[in-house]
Amino acid sequence: MGYGHLPMLPVRARILGTMDFCAPDHPGSTPWPPNWQRPQWPAPAKVRAFCTSRTGGVSVAPYDSMNLGQNVGDRPEAVAANRFQLQQALGVRTVFLNQVHGCEVVALTHAHTDGAQADGSWTAAQGLACTVLVADCLPLLLCTTDGSHVAALHAGWRGLAGAQPPGVARSETAVIETFLNAQAALGRGPACWMAWLGPCIGPQVFEVGNEVREAFLPGSPSAALAFVPQVRGKWLADLALLARQRLRLAGVTEVYGNDSSASWCTVGNPLRFFSHRRDRVSGRFAAGIWRI
Image (cartoon, rainbow, N blue to C red; front, side):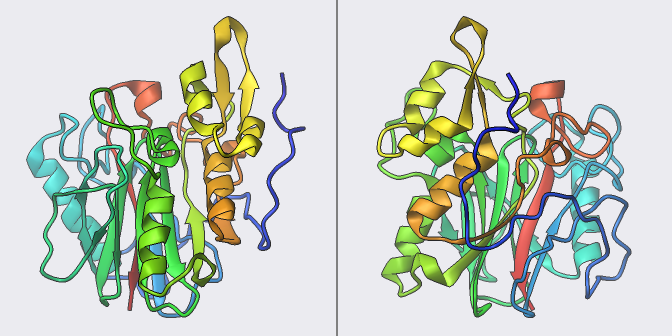
């Protein structure tokens, strides 16, 4: 069954459907490697963002070569060298999280080091990049329309649906809602934010069980549009569409980036992206955002 005929949820702003790879406006001390991406969205001038690829680092197969994940089996010295190279290319300090497919989002300051257990971060500080690691999950970058605050979220299906790993109680809200609710309490409602969706596993290959579909349907009937039935009770799921739906339902109307087309699929672009589902043993690439 084809997927292109299914209706997409409309948003006020356009969604770019092609990947754009280019150098940043204000690079660091070293050039960006090939295939690193600068998100193309109308973010305020004081906001910068990035998305790496699997190229440009020192890791050897199967982590070749720009693996930024510490807990995937790669040599620690290679990961450290890759992270150092990332910061040199960006000209800004990146802060990595210990991601657990949950909904915790932390507020970053310059006092923070890597390793906070969370699946998202936000900051008003300058020169500090909120950063998430992915290899099929969706990296979600946000900024306020005035450029005063930025955020990065790690959104797998559990984080989007609010379903936690086995043995952990289901969260009442998912990562997007958790973040936006907390920001609204601080006076920054959903209409203040714009979002960019990065590469993730695409709807052409993301086969899931019925329990995943059922996790999204309560309270969101439109989520059914993101699932195409397959044989043996399986479904093809559109992770990027589910994120766009969640953002729109939460009140974020300016959404850019991943439009679910094949060029954004981590599984289908092995020379460009790491993919855990494709390779099982895999590195991690990063997306992040900061204020200058």
